[in-house]
Every structure is written in C-alpha cells, then in structure tokens.
Image (tube, rainbow, N blue to C red):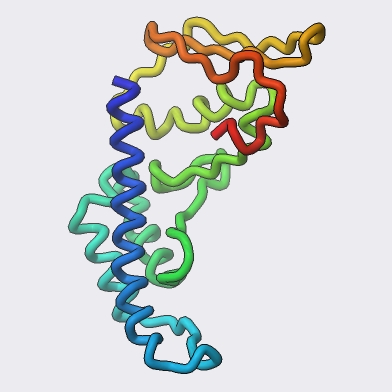
Length: 176
C-alpha cells in the first residue's frame, strides 16, 4: 500500500510538472520572438485563472479541506508565475500546508537523527486524508564509530527498508 501511494504521489508531482511545462511553453513561445533583454515574465490574470481552473478540473484540490479551497485557489491565482513553483498556504499551527500534497523536504533535516521519522509525522495529515495507514514497528539509526559509517533501517507496515548501509558520506544530497 505504501509503495502504491508513494508512486501515486510521484505521478501527481510529475503530472503537475507537465502542466507547468505546458503553460510555460506557451509563454516561452510568445517570448521567443522578443530579444533576450525584452523577455520578462509578466503576470497574466486570465492565464492564472485558467491554470487554477484546470487544476480544479483535474481534481488537484481533492485532498484539501473544502473550507480551505477558495483561499488556496485565490492564493494560487494571485501568486501565479509559470516560471516558478506551485504555491500553497501553510497552517500557522503546524509544519503542514493547507493543501495536503505540498511539503517541504530539506535534505539536511531529513539526514539528521530522527529526521526520517519526523518527516513521516509531518506527512501524517496527508496519510490520514487519503486513508493510508503507516505503522512503523522498527527503526534504527546506528553510527558505527569503529568503521565511521551509518546504518539506517526502518520497518513500515511489515516491510523492512534500508535507508543507508555502511554509509560514509555527508548524506544531505542522498537522503531524499
């Protein structure tokens, strides 16, 4: 179940990247006739509204709390930039976004001791919303001082995963 949900989230992210690429290409085609010094991304209200409407048609907001959807859409229209990332509104009381599929994942924080399980806790609202049960039954982060390496394993829903085995690097780039 975890693997299917992870794959589903990756597919959604790739799909969203494709949408951005499509809208960005349209903007790029319009700008390609201009000289490089004239190529400036300008805010386009109609394009922003069309983009957000298309996201809604595709079910993008289905995991958000329905009471948050109007504010999320309004923020996405206001902050729309086809050359940048999707935006979201963050909960003031927790490290979670109002849209449950938008999270920040810092490599360094994830690599530090407890970072992996902390991230799972941060993702819990999304797991709850989509009905994904996560049961961590075994988790070990062990630094071997003799060999100067890290062994890191976790068992989720009965499946054991090796995050690092005899790992000797910094880990910040590899953890995600």
